[in-house]
Image (cartoon, rainbow, N blue to C red; front, top):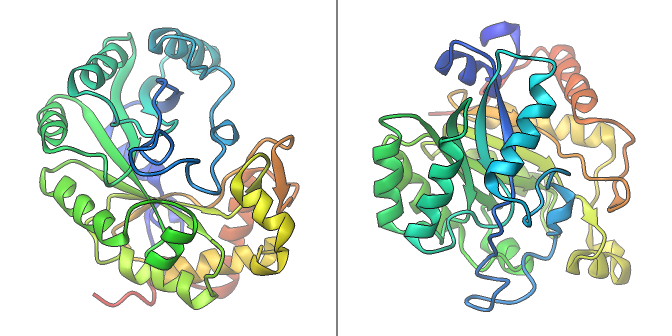
Length: 309
C-alpha cells in the first residue's frame, strides 16, 4: 500500500514529501497561444480544446500574472493563512514565446510573496534546449515541474485530434526533461475517438516505460464551440463516451497496469456546465474519485498490481 492507505500513489503525497507546509496551485493564463492555432503547425487547435473549459475565473489573459496570483491567493488564503503557492502556467502552450519573454513571466510569478515554485504546462514540441537549461538551473533553487500534453500514445489518434506532434516526440522530450533532474508530468485523455478499451489500457504500459513523476488522467468530454463538438453532432456513433460506472472501472484497470512509481494527480476533469455537452455525470471530481477509491477496495487491487518492470 501507498501512504495514507490509498491504493495508488497520490500526487498530494509527493507534495507533502517536498514541502513542510500545505501548498496550492494557482492557475495562470499568461496570454500564450499554440503552434497549431497560429499557423506555424496548423489552425484551429486540438479538436477537443476550448480553453474556457479549464481556465479559472480569475485567470483572464487581460490581467497581469501578478494580478492573477493576487486574486487566486486571496481566494485560498482566507481559509489557509499559512498556505504557500505554486504558480501553475496552465492555459495554452506555456513555453511558446521568446526565451526572454518566457523567463520574465516565470520570474514575475516567482517573485510574488508566498509563491514557492512553478508548474508549467506545455507541448512536447515546444521545449527548446535553452529553456530546459533555464529550468534545470531554476530547479536547483526552487520547485519546478514541467507537464507535457501527451493525450494518447497512438499516432493515429493524435493525428485525428489535430495534435500536430507524435507520441515519439512526447517520449523523447519526457526523457530529455527528466534527465535534467526536472520533475516531469504527462497529461492523458481517456476515450479519444477511435480508441478501444485495450488501446487505452496499453497507454498505461507505454507511459510506465517513461521517467514520469506525475500523471493526470481525465475522461473525454465533448465541449461546446470545438471541432470535436461539430464532429460529435454529425457522427455520434464514432465516439464511445463512458458511463460513470464504466469510467470508474477503466481507471482502476488503468492504474493496475501503471508503474507504481508514478504519482497520479487526478482521474477526472470537470468542465463548466454551460460548456459541457457530454458525458454529464452530475458529480464533482472528488465524488468520482471516491467512487474510484471504493472500486479499488471492492476489487482488492492497487496501482501497479499488473505492472511488469
